[in-house]
Amino acid sequence: MSDIEKVKQLRKSTGAGFKDCNAALKESNGVLNKAVEILRIKGIAKASKKMDRNASEGVVVVSGDDIKMSIIEINCETDFVAKNDDFIKFVGEVSELNNNHSSNIEKLKKANMKNNKTVDENLVALIAKIGEKITIGRAKTFNAKNTINFFYQHTIVKDNVSKLGVIVSLETAGKSDKIKLFGKQLSMHIAASNPIALNKNDIGQEIIDKEINLIAEELKNSGKPDEIAKKISMGKINKFKEENSLMSQDWVMEPKLKVQDVIKNLDLSDLNIKDFLRLKIGE
Image 1 (spheres, helix red, strand yellow):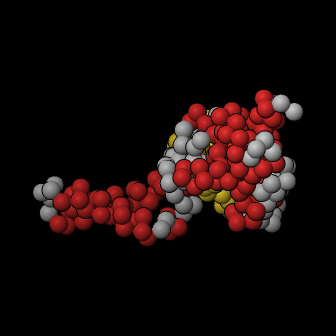
Image 2 (cartoon, rainbow, N blue to C red):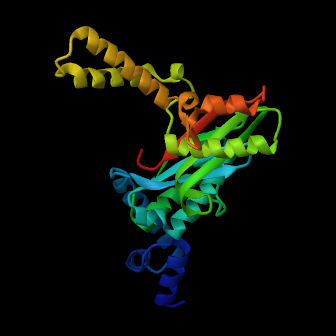
Image 3 (tube, rainbow, N blue to C red):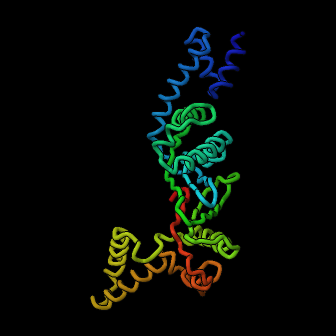
C-alpha cells in the first residue's frame, strides 16, 4: 500500500485531517494500527485542551414514545457545528441511548454506540475531528405508570433535533383525541411561556428571594412610604408567581383562560399534569 493510500485509509478510519494522518504515519513508520493509536492519544490531548472553552451552542434532542420519553441537551461552541452532519449523527444516536438508560448520564457515557466504542470515546474522537468543545448537558426521562408523554420542538435543525424542546407527562387512564390535542397544545404553551414550576408553591425559595431583592432595589429610590412600598412589593411577587406557574399562566391558545381553566373545561376527572421539562439552548 502506498503512502497516499495509507493516508486515505487512516483518514477514513479516524476522521482526522490529512496533515495529522501524514504526521502519525511518519511517527509510526508507516504502521497503520500504530498510527491510529497515535492519533487517538493526540485526539485525547486536543480534546482535554478544548474542554476549558465555553460551549453555549448546541442542540436539544427528543427520543422515545408516549410511554417512555427522554430529552437531552448536547452542547458545542458554534451554531455551525450544531448543524454539522457528524455532530447530528452523534447526537441522534446518543439520544436513543439516553432513553434506553433513563437519563443516567454515567451509564450513558459508558454505553456502546454502533461502532462498538463508548459514548465517551466517540465524544473524544468527535472533538478531535471537529475542533470544538462538545459536552453532554441536561437530560430527563419520563416513564411513570398511567401517564402519556407528549413533546414539542421549535427551531428544528433536523428530524428530532432542535434548539428548543419540551416534553410533558400527563397522568390519565385514557388516550382520547381530546387528551392528545391537549397534550400537544400544552407542550407548545410551555415552549412559549416558559413556566418555572407547575404551581405557585412549587417555585423554589431561592428564586423567590432573588425576585424580592430585585423588587426591593427597584422600589428603594421610588420615594414611596414604606407601607405603600411593601404593598407594591407583595403585589409584584404575587404577579411573578402567577406568571411563572404553569397552572396559573394565561393559556397561549386562548389568553382569557388560565391553564387550570382549560383542564377543568376538559371535564376529565383523572387528568393531571404529572411533570414537564423545557430545554432551550443558551438558557
